Image (tube, rainbow, N blue to C red; front, side, top):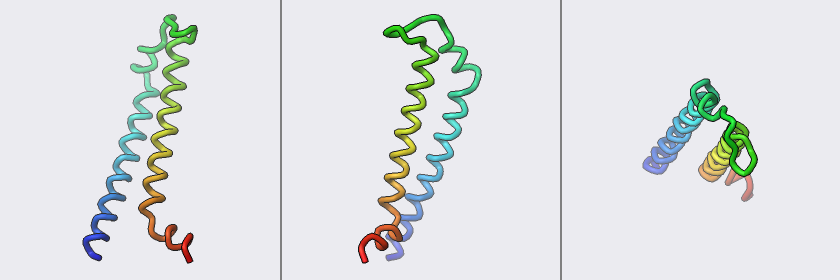
Length: 85
């Protein structure tokens, strides 16, 4: 039981560290160097690069948040016990 508790605690710590890493990556993505790189008059399929960069980055961040939430819910034993009385 102690080994399982330790494993669960380490898994949650890794999730917290990953949240911080992805938050910092999101802030970096919205700063000057990256926005300047994609702020060009070039288009892909008629869409400006900056437009695609922002929407693809937005979609990827939503997918990452969804994966983190799924991982958190699956490892939360309190929620699992509450669903099965």
